[in-house]
Image 1 (cartoon, rainbow, N blue to C red):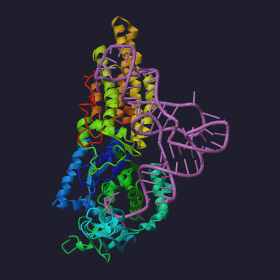
Image 2: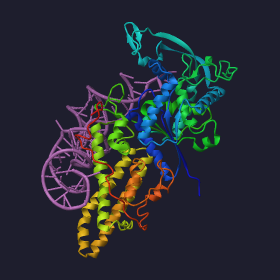
Image 3: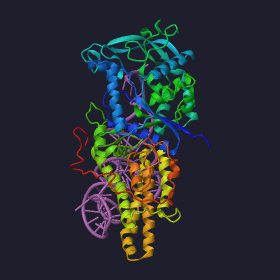
Image 4: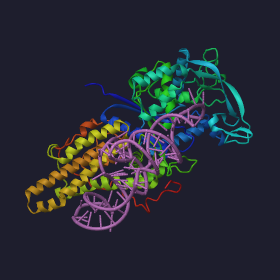
Length: 553
RNA sequence: GGCUGGGUAGCUCAGUGGUAGAGCAAGCGGCUCAUAAUCGCUAGGUCACAGGUUCGAAUCCUGUCCCAGCUACCA
């Protein structure tokens, strides 16, 4: 047997300065679906998600609240983990940039870049807010009194120069362009790649990678003279400053693969197969990050997928401060974890921004999950139980069943979309098949066949078994195929159909999914149907589905 | 400002030269196995606006208006 192929994917790590909204977790839900798909296919899969905790804003926020920074982030990180648990996110590791191995990885990357001649001492100049540190000009207002910080308009800003270490990003322009040329699909969707190519062609400036005005960060491992920045007692020398948060944040992806402590694991997982990121951090991932890796003699990731955002009604960006975000807890409470995952990924295109609302989620849930799929399973199990005495009917052969023919088209389209990160298109393909199954019920009218069979019509009895067998098989296939999206409902579908569910709760173990998704895979296996029970209770649009206060409507 | 993409049915969107499409929502009808579910039918658009090319334009060209993204150190 050949080794299982490995698949390593990551999300961006979130900065935990607040309770996460659904728009933040959307990316993680999408990545989780991809991770589960690969696990079920039988790939050795590693899925990394986590938090980016070294931003000056985090330290600032903790200070405002009068809290110890570490204690504050621990609490915020718990909120993230709870929200992810509620959505059945299944990371193989939840990485925190405050983890000790990440400190080692970040310092090692600085050392390697330094050894390679790509790190040098320079100075960083800019407007400095005494309360917040250096501010980008784009974050400031120019007034008659000079430049002002929007958060502290009464304080005079200072033009300061700080000693900084710089990374020689400018040296990597041509190598990056060559990389883009050699790997034309490495940044997707295409228009996101083109934006970065345009940026590259303008030329690159070096970037600062250290800070010395605050100490919430990973200690910079090198002194001005190149010697290790370690004090006699082995502790880091605070005078050396800290690694700038962006440089350390990106490195989480290799820390999570075993760098530098575990070369065997690292060789297995790296380069990553997929980074799923938001459009706001494209440049960091597709220009700075590959240059950092090149400098350290490490291959760039194979693919970066840049997803869009959930927008509130009117096209506004969702945020806590705007008061228009969807609380994942509310969404899970109303739709269930599976329903929340489904509506988010079905309503929002994974390759661009989409406007969503509580109402659009309710409509989608009712139409696709309660009415189409949930009801299909319910009517199938009910009819088969009633008409056939609880014995599970076998599907017809693939040659004899029109549903099998349709499935032969549906599954490849579904798999192609999913593996191409078009997670919404994948669901659209699969739900087309749900409609085919519902139409078969109307065309065959099993209740009429049952009546005829009761009257002694042998042909009708045979046809009844065939039709219901096909429908049971269709439900099995849909339930299994949708399992990455509906991880807790899929086992219940199989159970109602009288099948055991062979995968663990994270999708690992069990037979290769694509084999299980062959029409009639278990047609010869006798079994009894389970009990029909609604999988997705319908939400009434007026009472039960009322949007929680504060949600965009 | 520059570059790129977009403005199509109430909603979300597909459709790159040949008589406007899907899903949802709405109305009507059928069926009864089912979560008032399902199946069928109907209605609904001067395809942002104005010119132009063409036998013919949502689709190509020009201009205008509007929206979004990119245009480097908040992350």
